[in-house]
Image (tube, rainbow, N blue to C red; front, side):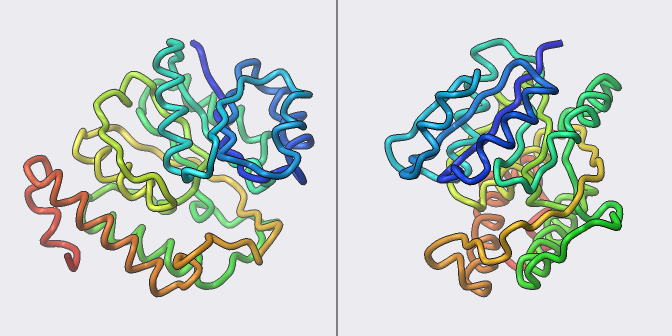
Length: 243
C-alpha cells in the first residue's frame, strides 16, 4: 500500500519546519504544493526531504489539491492523505487515517471537527462555524451524504477513484464541487474525528470571501452550478436546495 501525504502551503514560513518535522515521523512520501509563496517558505522547504510543486503565482487551494491528485495518480500511489500546514491539523492523527485505510471499506476518509467534542478544541470564529454547518447541511439535503464537516482539509482519498472527477473550481469552494461529484459517482465516504484547532483566529480568506454573506452566496452558487452539471446523475438533488 503506497500512501502519499499532500500538503498545500502559502506563506507558511512560521509553521513549515515544525509541521514537516512531525509529518516525517509518520510518512516517507510527502508532496508539498507551494501556491506562490512570497515569504521564506520556498527556502525552508529546501531543508526537508519532500517533493515540491511550486506555482509561480497564487492559484488557489482547490488548484493545489488538483495538482496533488494528478501527482498521486501518475506516481501510482494507492492513497493520498491531505492536511494543512498551519498546525490546524495534527500530524499525530495520520496513523488514524492509515488504520481506516487498512479497513478497505471507504473511498474517501474525511476528518471531522464536529464528529466528537474534544476537550482541547479551540472555538472557531462564529461566522466560519455557522457557514460550515449551513453548507454541510445543504450538501446533506441535496446529496444525502452523511458528513458533519464539509470543509475539513484533513482527508484520505483512494487515488484510483480520482480520475473520474472533472474539477474546475480552484479556490476555497473546491470542497463543494468535490462532494457533489463524489455523490454523483457513489463513492463510499466515512468520517473520523479530528481536533478543532485555530491558532490564528484573524486569518482571512482574502477578497470578497472575507465577507460572510458573500462567502455563503459564493458557496451556494458553486453548489447550484455543480448540481446542474451533474443533474443526470443526481436528478432530484436540486429540488432540495434553493438554486
